Image (cartoon, rainbow over all chains, first blue to last red; front, side, top):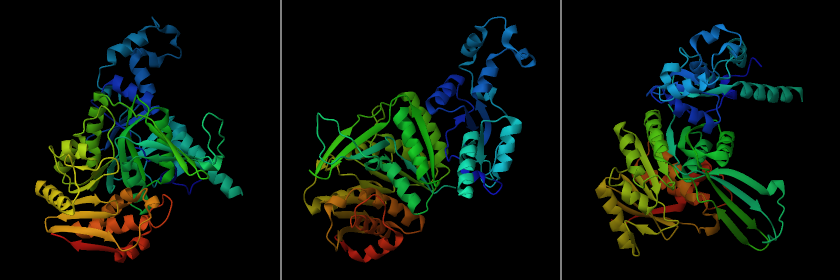
Length: 155
Length: 318
């Protein structure tokens, strides 16, 4: 598995959003593209952040919520919905994860697998030496390619 | 830096079923090996051909729905030299179904009407296009336009590309060219005359009319113009003159499929390798003629193109 590189398993897809696009637009894009998160880039296609469904849900919860273990303390179950409505026109840049964790095509699969496990990422942007977006790598693509490689080795 | 940005505004999923003794109003069963699914649309085809020549590209345009996702997944399987960057829309991407019956020699085609693109999606596309265009050396805009997108879009996209000094290729129908050239002109203009034979609003007949039309486009700002004449010939114009390209071999018309996209992709390859103007067109023409020498979608090899360079003639007519 160590010999496999990110370039062998990544998806060469450049679907991205800009920081000034709204929360509503990003949710719409995630829905249509069937993605759980998306890289945020500047006008030079350099990755400046990453926004996931989780980031948007967190933005709709009261700030103290992170300290709690359960949603039972939420004063009103409609709170999340009304907060989502409130932030829907906000630029997504307000809620983006920064700094963003990225990998290079030459990084090993082991390095990426480690990042998926330790940091609980579902998708990681792949960039070149100038931080320009080249694609993404997902947990599933790592697993799928690793198992294919494994079955070839065992044959 | 990627070499090419291939703009395919209206991609399609091409489905081909070979059903011998196809019967209407009956159940027809297709064996799995005779059921093919390939990503299509002229810009997509150009990117796929470029990948066979080891040239990396980014494909952009509009994609939507279940068919769009299938297309995307099939396109990603072809080659990692092709990066995708589509704007996702609500409507379904086009699906072109062809049912070939090799016993009765019939071809039944069912093409979906294609999506309607809304204004927000067009705006999102233009913003993304401007970022992508800076990442490449050459832009190729090729093929039809989905409903909702104005015919002038080729011009708008070219105006943006020119801001960053990129070389721009077009292959399109007359209606698109007429509207788009009011805004900007490409470096290389190739007419798509498959569905309509109109050039600048008129049907041309004589060779002299083709020569005059070629000169007119050069006067308007194109560096290289290619007008297909009677399917197998081409009138090619630059500021230095006009040439008529002809094959020295017989062309099998049933193998013409894909020749136009091969022409464009090979011209781009020649341009990236430093060829200019007539030499670039000659290379593309030789590749297109080579493509008609066999059946199948695969583009000709570099060696085949080199061989065919001596099997095409370019006669100066102006």
